[in-house]
Length: 274
Ligand code: BTN
Image (cartoon, rainbow, N blue to C red; front, side, top):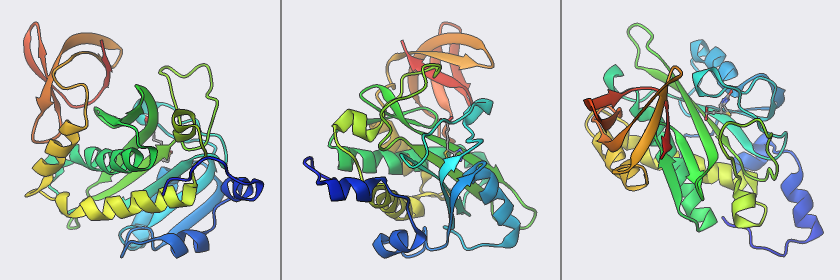
């Protein structure tokens, strides 16, 4: 739900206080996702805590959410910065019916769900950037860190960690790439609980597509929301830079790039539009 401008002092107060599990459950429209909540004022990383829950057989769709992370983790060993109480930093535990070869599609699925909600609540065109960033006005508004494990004899378990910049208005100058938040891009504060509940609802709605037979639909929909396909990009892989035209996503979610040396499939790294 988008909160329109002209908020009273009271609504502003409501927007800035901490979240509670009761409030989340009260507004949640899902059947399973987010029904089991582990909420922390401060934790090292919601992904790390979620991993510790996996052997305890918590229900699928369990979420771990924190107002503040002391060791928020990003991709490629980076740190995720998020000002306490301003944004959404949470992880969800899922067990998709997906072969290990399609594990790369998990991040695309989460990116698609978040991008759909950002587009809906901001009324701005949000963009999926391979492999797992969401951009608003060309700046990063959300990052996703998916971590999978393959326990013997059980389905794959994935922890999807989502960091969405909601009401933060300033970012550390040392960030490698420009960042934005919903508030910076739209000019008004957003209710974090409503935003969380909408994302969980969208994740649950798209979840039937996250299996071997349907994940091509995720690729198709993700590709429609990506501005990079067909354009020249720079790829950074372990400090090595290369350039090429981003052609398409392969069926396993890898990026196919046409380089001067021929087509190349990329499974990890960073991409930037040239
Ligand atoms: C990236 O863009 O590099 C991915 C960032 C992922 C950040 C989220 S915040 C919630 C979850 N817990 C973590 O420690 N990381 C993810």
